[in-house]
Image 1: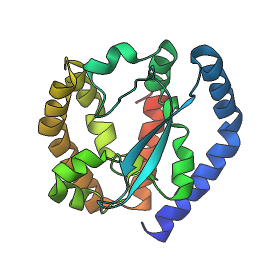
Image 2: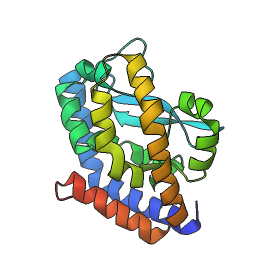
Image 3: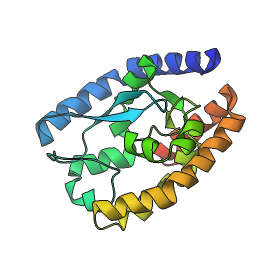
Image 4: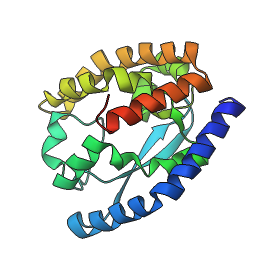
Amino acid sequence: MTPGKRILDIGLALILVLVLGPVIAGLALWLRLSQGAPVFYASERMTTPERGFTLWKFRTMTVAARDSGVSGGDKAARITPAGRWLRRSRLDELPQLWNILRGDLSFVGPRPPLREYVERFPETYARVLQSRPGVTGLATLVYHTHEERLLARCADAAETDAVYARACVPRKARLDLIYAAHRSVCFDLVLIGRTAARVLGRG
């Protein structure tokens, strides 16, 4: 995390908090009224191979007593109507502005992995997590749609885990390492712009 990258993260996050604060508050109220508590979903993710943090999102699924692993077809029935719209628009990730201000995340970087995959693939994530995890990134823009399609076909948690470990982890890691080899503030701005265009339906 270079000083320039951190300055970009803090500056942009503060601007978005000021501009989108009413939107965030309105979404929180709407979710509380439409699908009840809790409004937020908290999940442990890794910012380094050794250090975890709590990642915050708006809740998009019904609450389950035990919930672990990545989301695949086995969890599709739990996605709420509001959650489906939030995911499609990526507004469920707005609470991660708090993670950015705390320094857990950057705007751009590899998506923060679950602890179980870091422990299963230590050599891969020792390299990937040399970059601060991000809300978006090269792997997110290039591979996320394909990953969703792969996982959506999975019928149970074991199949979801197997497909994710076999196909998604290595392919995303290759893209994350390409990003790491070329990362700069200018490259981050390009990726942020492409993400914004995609969210707005222009990319």
